[in-house]
Structures are given as C-alpha cells and as structure tokens.
Length: 223
Image (cartoon, rainbow, N blue to C red; front, side):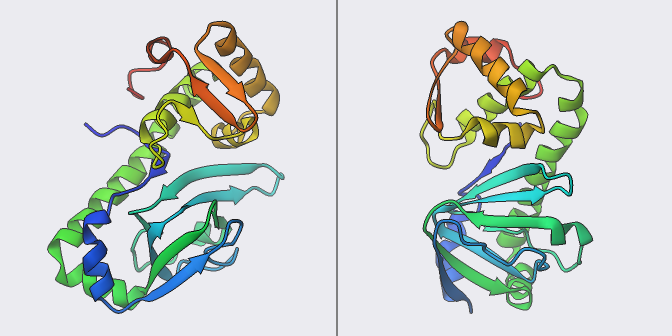
C-alpha cells in the first residue's frame, strides 16, 4: 500500500536514458530561481536530473501554503493537456542548484503515447499525488494540531529524497506553511514533543530522537 507523500523523488529515474534520447532542452537553475514565472501556465514538463524544488501558493491573505517538494529523478509538473486556472497561482522555486531536462507539451505527448511504460508511470504518479491531497482533505481536518504535526514529521522522515533519515531540514515556519497552522501552534507542539524526548531541534533542522514514540502519536492513515 502506498502512503501519503510530501516529497516526490526517483519516480521516473528509470526513464533517464530514454529522456536523454528524446528531443529536449537542458536547463540549469540556481537556488531561489523560479522554474517558471509566477502566473505562467504549465506549458512544459521538466525532469529533475539533480537538485530539489518546492511547490507552493501565496494566498491573498498573505499566508504561504507549501504543497509539495520535488527531488531528483522525478517529473514535474505532471503531464496533461488541460489548462487549470489554479495552476496560475502555483509557484515552483529551486531549493538548490538544479539540472533539468525540459520538454514541451507536444514533445512529452509524443513520448507518452509511444512508450507504454512511461504512460503507466505518469498515471501512477498522478495517483500518488492525488493520494497526498485526499489524505489531507479527509483526515487532517479532524485531527488535533499535535497529530497533524506528528503525521507530517513521520511522512517527511520516510519520504525525503535526500535520504537524510531522521533529520528534517526544515524551519518551523516551513512546517506551519505546510499544515496551515500558526507559528505559535507549531512552536507549542514542538516544545511538547521535545519535552517527551521525541525530537530535538537546531536552527533550520529537526531530528527525530524517538521514532517509535512518534509513530504512536500518528494516525493509522499516515502509517
């Protein structure tokens, strides 16, 4: 059974040589660069050779909602041929130096229609991406702030593309932006988890020090 994910990486790595053999453009991005301009529709598909990016939306209220993270070996945004208005409000920004293979929609369409293994992978990736939103929509609304936080920490720990294990390189503000909670709420819940010996924190980093105890605080849906 697949579990919800916030990090997406390695989903398409087996197609790397195939992607290289197809018409494409190689691009480099620096940390802080937009992978496409804010307000620009999804008019191309990118394969991440190296580096990582963050996908988020800045709400009119001034709050930022972090949607997902994407690392090497994945394709983003997903391939489709329909324009969705919501995409104009989404932003993808490089978290590090990135090397990318970029395809136009017609170029990726040609691959999608001629390579059955790739088309199946695209469909399965979309299913995984939708699973992330269904998890949040159905379950997170009814959970306490502590359970929401523990679910997130568990999912981030097991799904990080950097394979950093029990270390999560993320600020309290980032966590608040993912969960849609206030910084005060996050600080309060992290303080309680620290007092229980479940986590330790340093500037910009969080380490799970008692993973079994963290799991006990998570919901079954996250596990």
